[in-house]
Image (tube, one colour):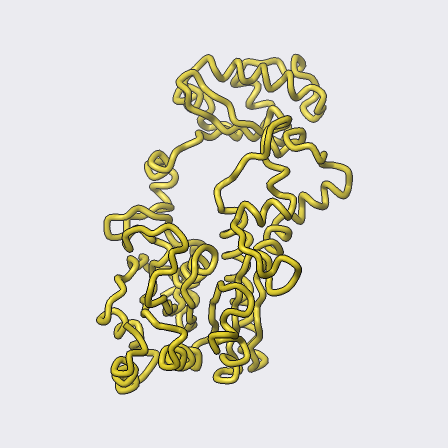
Length: 380
């Protein structure tokens, strides 16, 4: 099921953006086999398998990539695949005998997807790093946070998953599409720094046009404006307020019982600090629930700031099924949605076992070949 039914992908196990990209493609119907390490790498955040939900919708095998039998097994899988995902430092898969040349010799239509923080070349290519480092050097981190304070540390969504996973998945799909037309594969070099910079395209344009200040917390979308802000309510809970358009802004002020003239022109940045103080004082007079009732049915662009448990129970999220229960574990549903090629309910992550490994190889290799590889100790 799903629009990617029939697409086959080999995932060389890693952490961060690679597994999430594999999950996204598997959610859309691709058949993904995860080639895991025989021994844990010690990287990432170890947890019980059922809670490592980014591993859903695919089966795994344990393979020693340094063993010739294990390497041969991976190359056998590559022969059947449309694409491969790897997230090692540059040069690692080449030293293992599983680099692009070795794999594409076995399957010249293969799209070889590589995801790293810094990319396959450049002065930092061999350096270790994490999301925070990547968004720091691309100018994103410096732009996040209140005026006059240190940059705020966001979750690792911007770099690892938006700049990494999504661009890797997009690159693989584009590569597969092209390979089916040309008959020849290619390497997709996904650098998180490149993806993050690409996500900043609109804001970079504004900065170059002189329409965005370098000082964080002084612009419309970075907490500088009173009408694009988070406000605390009387009960200590928060509301997000974002009526950028004037007609929506006026609805906000009407429900707050504030005369627009008392705040000055909406887009006059010189007035924003004082206006923010006025709105903050007003929002502190009622608990969040009362404000939500007051704004219900308006276009004032006011929404509650929810924790995850509250998000699970939000009426809109519940009706759309944005979060779902899979084998007793709550998690986001596959996205996006398709009118005809419906997406299946995700399968929970599979335990690493010999039985599951044999099941993972079913449909990839002949049964006799799997038996021979098992006898040779190519997988566990």
